[in-house]
Image (cartoon, rainbow, N blue to C red; front, top):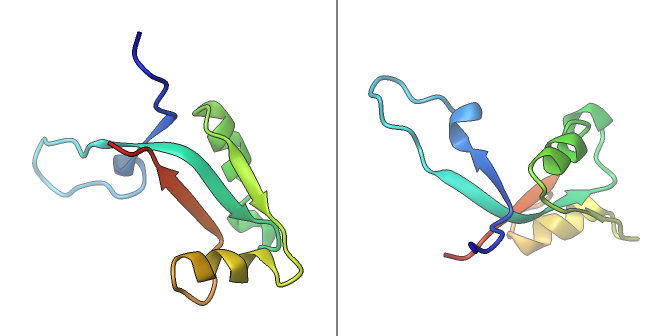
Length: 89
């Protein structure tokens, strides 16, 4: 039995490659962290449905300091709307 590696997200869906027939590798995610204070809301409205279709847990980050600032601190940026956590190889 193979271990559950989370949902596969293909980078080809968002960034099609020009020329060539090589397909980019799938990225397997363990979870998606999503800032609950995202504005405008339509930027992240599709993520719960996408995560559910790929069987990837979605974790909402809510904080008194605002979730987008807290997520940004994790990756050393000012703010972040969502972060995908990859499965370790």
